[in-house]
Image 1: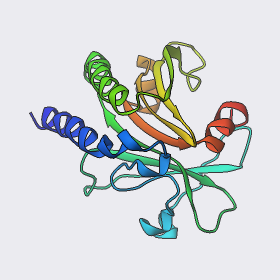
Image 2: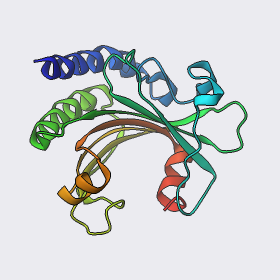
Image 3: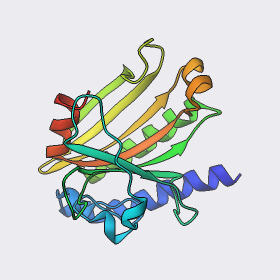
Image 4: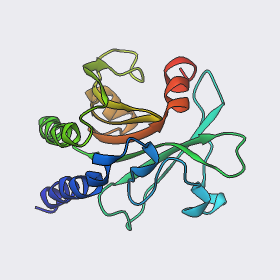
Length: 195
């Protein structure tokens, strides 16, 4: 019951959080847990808690993640920032919710949220790619959905990831939903340089 309430709360929060978007196309107006692209991580976390996790092919951006019992909707937040930025300005932010027992439930919630986003961003370019093989699983058995709305200065989107049984057993990664927002600069980097 607690999980169902969290998902209902997520849809309600998304509905009310996105209402301002009907008149805006700026990625900086969108928030997850009160945090937005363009904010400084230092406004939310002490520097000692900000990790530097890198991708294989480029260290232009680093990522960090945080769990908190104070988060209202998401179990974990992940952020990307420029490695040499002393202000730790956020270029990508995503919130995650586990669906470890039922990936179909994730897909159903994804459809509901996408429907809501389509009414909020009627003029945004849709970048719906359906199911793709996850690049983190070299076996090709893990899949994820990718659905985004491209705005003037970034993108807002949602993914559901269905990890293979082996990945879950070996790494402890759980199936889940990810709602993200990212700057155009980050989007170009993650697609063309990071992996």
